[in-house]
Structures are given as structure tokens and as C-alpha cells.
Length: 452
Image (cartoon, rainbow, N blue to C red; front, top):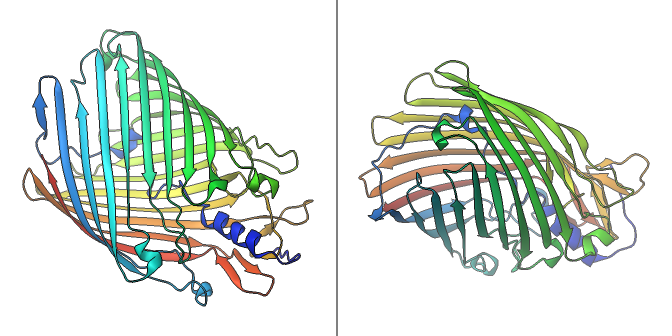
């Protein structure tokens, strides 16, 4: 346990609390496995959409009633200043996709989704969460059926997230990736090509509405390829090298996070063992390459294993494990071990049930305690007085039941779990808890989907 308590400074203490509240931003909320291991069920309904020539338009709108038992991710330890607060909301999510004939030489894909939220509450901090988010993506590929293809793409996302205490400030953010990709895939048709290699580059900006110290600019590069040496088995390689820079030096000046050049390289084999069992195995190496000459960064192996099982034609089960490095706002990176389960079951021709559960152990990079703040329940860093490392268990789960009422209307009922188990907490110089890292929240929702 590490306890640092220099002179009092409330502003820096609150800033560290905000940073700690954001450490899980960007982490997935469900297990992620290789495509071959997942063995997805085919679509229940017939192909939907409005066709005009080579283009297919798919509009839809979802209206959801949602209740979150802990909207501000509060802990019982914070009850005096940050009580646990539940909130209900109505969410409207319109979606639209437009694409041309995917078998052609030039492929066009456009998709857009909105996320409008109205909270049912008299609390000012909750009502302030009324907002509109969403995403859009556009990619155009030239020469898909040629040995060399070129793609231009742009992806924008506006995500909505409450702060971890009742305040008018949120963790809403806007991000945009724009870039291109060149692919080399010899062979006569895409369906029969055994070999593919792609090199892509993108420029990414990430902007928070209320916390400019988190804003980053990133250059992303990626090299990936696959070789299908058997009809249902392929070897693959995936390497990324990013260059991330914070636009404001505040966090770096206080040794909380750092510019970085994270590098990852992973190779593996994916395929089918039998008609009912599939697998994905991979191994590689990752390095965080932090700008700090003092703070130790990540430099270790990466690994992954997942297995899919199809006991019947309407049942899919997948289990998996990954060891990875991820960017983080605290300490520059997180060393992540993740275990996950995913199951899907179809009943008749109108009902799909899916369930997932994930448990992740995260060890964050070294950071320095700020003035006026006591850091408790963290591991001290050997040879670096005043530095700490946060360790968490993060749990996430989902249960969703979907009903295909007609071709045009669907219903869904669901439950989400999100939880952090950690002894980590921050207190001020007068022992007031600024932020306790642990929390548990339950979400329930019911949706009506109208589509064409």
C-alpha cells in the first residue's frame, strides 16, 4: 500500500480524481474473439433494405427504455459527497446504411447512427446528461477484384459518458479517424484468394468536451495479412505502431501519463478443428515506448487463445483468453489479462438469446501522486518514491433476448453488468474521499426496433 500526502492542493487532487475516473475509457464491454472462433448464427430475417440499382439503403430506428442503477459509477465509500444514484432514460437511436454491390470492383460503404438521450430526473447533473451522440463511417475501395486495391476511409464517433460524481461536467468526447489502406491480394476472385496483405495509415484526433487535458492526436499505422493454406484454416500477422501525443502537457508535467509510441505485433493460426469446433491461437510482443526516461513502460509478450463450439445448428459457444497492452490515461498504458465467454442460442425462427461475461485484470503504468492527495490501495514502484501503480479487476456482462416480430419490427430485452473491483482510492489531506475506484452498476433495457 502506498500513501502520499504532501501539502494540500484541492485542484490537483480533483484533477487526479478525474483522470482515475477515465482509466477505463475505451475498454471493450464484451469479450472479443477471432471471427473463426465465434461462428455467428445466420440472420433470422430475410435481406432487408431498399434497393436502387446497385445501391442498397437500410434505414432503422430503435426506441429504448433504459435504467442504470449507478449512473455516476459511485462507490459506497463516497456516499457523503457522491451518493449512488440511479436514473432512467429514453433513448432514440436512428441508423442508416448505404452500400453498393459488394461483388463489384469499386465498393462504397456508408453508415451513420444517432444516440439521443433524455433522462427522467429532477437532478441537475442527471438532466445535464441529456445529449445527442452517434457515429458515422465512410469507406470507398477501388480495385477490390484487382490484385492491388486502394481504400479511403473516415470514421467519426461522439460518445456520451457521465462523470464519476454528480457534476455538470461530463466525459463526453468526439473522435475522428481519417486515412487510407493499400491491399495486395493476388488471385482471380476475392472468394478464391489464399493470400492477402494490407498496409494502412490514419490520423486520429480525440477531443473531450470538458477535460482538455485528455485530448490527443495520434498517427496510426497497421500491417496485417493472412494466408489460407488449408480450405478452412489460415495463418495471419497483425502489427500496429501508433504515435500518440497529448495536446496539453498538464498530465505529463505531473507525471500522470505520457506521450507514447505503442507497438504491437501478433501472429497466429485460425480455423476449424472439426465441423463443430473452431479455434484461434496467437502470440506476439508489445512495447508502450513511453516518452518518460524514468517511468518503466510495457515490454512483454502478447498472447491469445479462443475456442468455438457448435453443439447444434442453433447454438454457439466461445471461450477465450487474451494478454494485451492498451493505451491508458493513467500511467500511459495498461497491462491487461482478459478471460471471456460468449454464448448464443436460437429458439425457433424468431427468438435469439445471447449471453456474455468478461473478467479483466489490469495493471496500469506508473504515475505520481499529486499534492494534497493520499493514494491508498496501490502498489508502490520500486526505486521510485512517490510513484504508484493501480491494479483493477473489471467485470462486464450482458444478457439479451431478441424477438423478430415481423420483417419490419423487432423487440429486445436486456441486462448489462459493469463493475470494478479494486482497493484503489484517493483521499484529500483532510481524509475526505475524492474517488474510490470500485463500483458496481446494473442496467436493464427494453427496445422496439423498426427497420426497412
